[in-house]
Length: 99
Image (cartoon, rainbow, N blue to C red; front, side):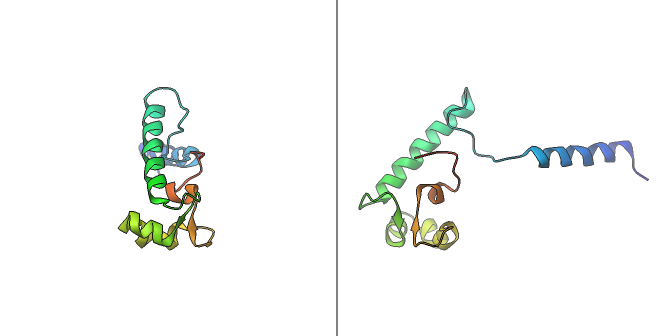
């Protein structure tokens, strides 16, 4: 036997799961979420550019290790296509912020 509140809660979770896309705000969004995304993207670009010492647009395992112990540890997990480099999208973990 379902209680009305339990049924409503189940419906809410189902609807939320069906519409959820990503926690990453779009950089071109109006208002504060867009401002936060623009600042986060700019900071990520600065870190990526500083780590990309040979300026080839991707991070080698050595460049990633020199930039961050976390990137060195998670390199294989982030290198989704297995080419031995981190692209911009692999570095930030999504494709919502075009380079």
